[in-house]
Image (cartoon, rainbow, N blue to C red; front, side, top):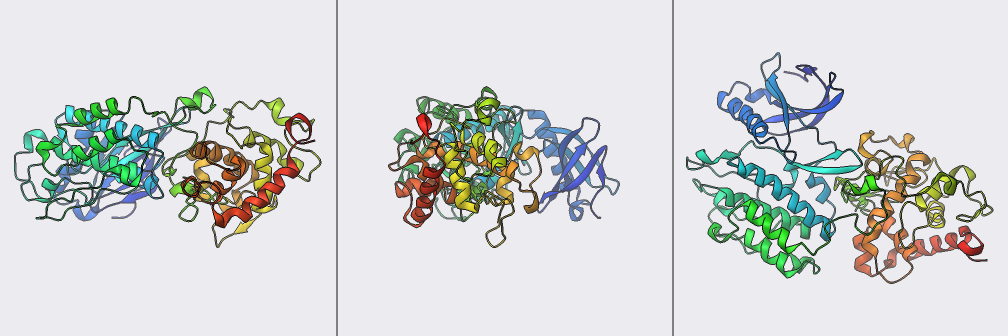
Length: 513
């Protein structure tokens, strides 16, 4: 049985991923002109009636819950070769696992995500369904109109309805996230098993690591409070998360609703709006972020350069992250929608008098408007057109054709393709660019989006805010925070940027005479 060409009326375009029982494909609904995800049972399981029934049951459960916080099922059927399939929401921004691959999100983002995931589990519980396999890869991320994102729970392959929980159960779940009773034969998992999974997910969001797995027959290890790894975590959050992770389920929160209510009370005074305090366009405020944390995309996304820079699993090249994302991913990453440029007007971008950026300092004229737009993307201490120009000069010498395959960095701003896809205009609504497609028109605006998102993490750090941003672009916000400013290994680069800033600053009221 080969690659399917279609599933019903849905064209099959490419494979998104596969597991032991099924594969997921990117499809296209021609009638509605919309991308979809098509889940198809693996051919070697197609003749097993019990597996087929479980596969179809998953689709039915998702359809019954019918919540925007879960993957939604639109259609079901069989291919010509007899394999069952169902059509569901396409998560165009990956999953939480990708967003968390580089580093945990900011505290307010971690708490907001935990509350959203908990709401999704509450929707399952209200329908009498216990998920039993809560983990980052089963938390999907989808873009929404206006430049935002939303999470969706997925994979009810081992879920049980409460009327079947009393029947024999075998060990099932994912190490690091499964409750101790799920590791035992006939452990009779119930809603409190999902509470443990929620606690483990929240712990991972806060610390960057799951709390640890217990082996069958061994008592669960007591995890350290999240604040041990992240001192800014309030004691009340420690208490709520550790209660969710109690080995004795009678001591846990009794349900997702109870855990969610506790998070609501505890975090009511914690800023859980990732855009709070930033001057962002109204349409951007309605979404999650100007970029993913993803994260990942993603996705910190650039310095947050992919593993080296972590561009998060989402960050970017010279800003190389990865994310996201995801990452955003990632964590997990598109910036404000096209046209929502942080308040920069067309007249201001033109800057014919050089009040924002010098006109006689060697900056290529064809890049001026892009540089001014990126440097005016938001109100952020240290961000300016002069900084963007200085970073471009330091990163590439304004070379739009730069190629550095060894570092997987290309173009005038040294982006890595799978990081740039999250920060480019339009974000993940557009395909990942090939190296030869990484133009200044993509690269330079993405710098503004990236810096505006991650730069908030550097607030109140000592030193020159502009140089802290330049160092963050090379490494990550977390690294810069940890160093208390520009890390030692990036000081030579920061000094280079500083000299260029002095060269490109406008004279007069906007700069030195």
